[in-house]
Image 1: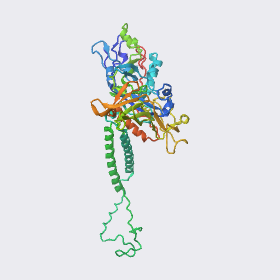
Image 2: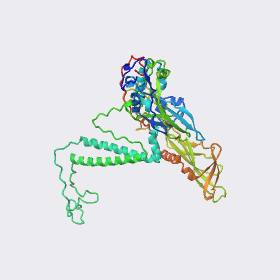
Image 3: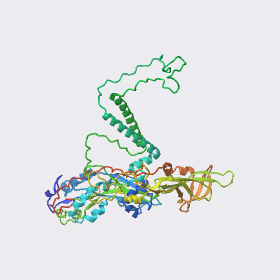
Image 4: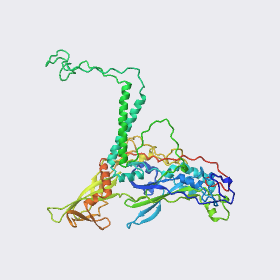
Length: 608
């Protein structure tokens, strides 16, 4: 029998129905990018697993390199697969509408990672775990769903945690601003300059604030104040004296009202009051100017590879349309994070979605004595097809070194020298030390740091503003809710400088950074490049003990060099870090309305 489109389970003959296995589309538009920054200590207190699983340093600052992975899932295509009869006049039927409409959800998003080895092969396939704080939907489902009757309650938890399951936001940062992988990749392609981006962003924010003030002033102006505008002052005659002053004034004679420190006009005209019409004209002109400047800044920031910046909030008086449900949305955004990525390694990723099985627990309605059909109803979850692999992500190292110059010593024959720049990540930025080297010298240096402070975790732990993990029933619940509460930065405490908000200031951070990671690297020789007597190259013993040859031109052309150099320049001007709020989720599908359970037809499974 072939079920008609939209048929209910009640119209199907028990024991005679056959279904084709549901084909769940693979995610598309996949992308991955590495990211470095300093995680807000409040996140560590809220999610102790970050420490216990060694996902962050044991002590502050909580510097971290991670990878974010995103993709898009076509929910409309999944609905089409559910509605369509798979074989026309053949024996297989379309799934009954009341098995899946309002009863099908993305229960989990699985992300698989592969690592590139030294030979360039992809090895060690691993499914990465959800990050601490993310709702562990698949493990919870496996633990709680033992029969079809358990589906309804667990499916309700899945709906309330949908944001965390599908696109969990990255942690709040003390230093650094997380961005979507597509944005980070665009920045890399555009040779992103973070210093200029920061300057333009601050300029944009100031202009947007001023524009809101101007628009507020315009809204408060009366349409007409009922008075005629003040007349323009008559032009001054050329023969009117301006410096004679009160008593006396022939040419060259200074009267009592004149002199260098006297007002040449003892009876100045009173300043005219600006009428509402004149003020409106002035404000409208400023509004036009600001709007043009804001548009120009937004375009430039976008061209630099910056994230699409939000428009300033306006009161349109219209209620925004509800976002589409998963089965109505052909671009459900998926987002995951790999906190176990090792700095210096290269990875690629792929994703697939996991949904609850609409046929689960319905063996009684399927064809009897058909093992393949009976098997369709035995598992509560269905895994979709894998996406294609993402781009390769090379996670930035904790430390770098580059040879930046090499020179021949004119006074000491055979003893040429070189200079190197050493970089090490600390408190949100790469720090740079410049060292001069002679053959036999190790790459060791030190650099003085800006005056920075750590966070007083003891006081912070006692502060009620610290985000606490929410009960499972509340996590992500309610329309527009977050997977867990993340308050705005707190108020100053006695240990904080006046005017500073956020976590409590604690002991000073390091005053100086010593570069020891490269202490095993030795400069062995500086000599001409073969066939090019005017160019020098350096010969060194690398960290692994092997000989390496470097030229200043080659090292400065390495893509990482410009990136870490710019980071170090920003780090020199670093002020005391302040926390930045967690990024807003991409979007959220509203919770589908629950359909009353269908107790007929063999077991009420599949969420029903």
